[in-house]
Length: 125
Image 1 (tube, rainbow, N blue to C red):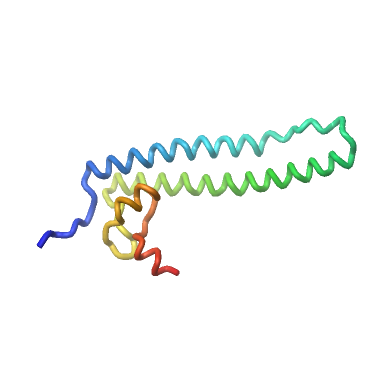
Image 2 (cartoon, rainbow, N blue to C red):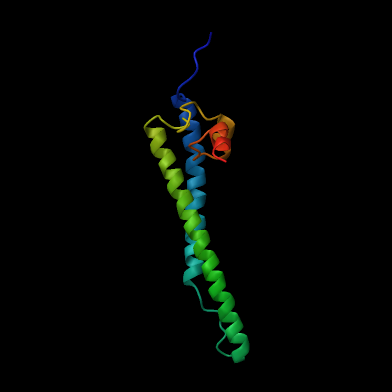
């Protein structure tokens, strides 16, 4: 009877690390774009009618709020990816925190910062 693996091999961890680093790079770029869109607020409405200006400023405020929420979510995603890198270094990456079993490679390739197996995730509902 084959013994069940309790952790991923160094080669497998290296593959996951590469996936995470690529996602982390993109996530950081997206986060910077969101931050710069929040800071840049000049829309050039100084020479337009007061009514239009109020509408334009309202839309800009709403857009800033949405961008702020997206930036917060992006930052949280970056933190999860960075935590996954720490787990790779500790060789605990890919181990479900509920069951202690390995999370499937397929799941980790799609959600590389996952800490729960599909079964454990479904049991949370």
